[in-house]
Amino acid sequence: MGYWSRLIGMDKNDRDSHYSLAKAHVRFGEWNDAEHRFREVLRIGQTPEDSDVWVYAVHGELAKALEKQRKFEDAIREYEKLAAAEGAGEQEIAAAKERIAELRALRRGR
Image (cartoon, rainbow, N blue to C red):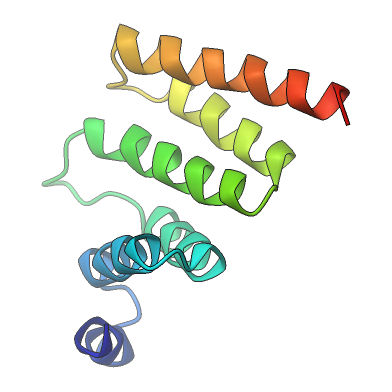
């Protein structure tokens, strides 16, 4: 993880390094750190070389990291962004809507 951190230190807008570091944090179950890095990826945004598919994928990964931290309201918002993102397919949209419903039910059951 030090490699990506050094690259980010040299260029805070290195989206690919933020993304790789986020994925590493996910692998180690470091959900708060993963959340921070996924948010940085979204802050930096897309470049002209990117496809629209990329946006919805990051919203979904961020939503999962938020769920792991029991930040259900924030996760719902990210799933809603995924469902509204250009490039999201029918299957991804259906899965996001299903997860939104499950999280809302879970929230009501508290």
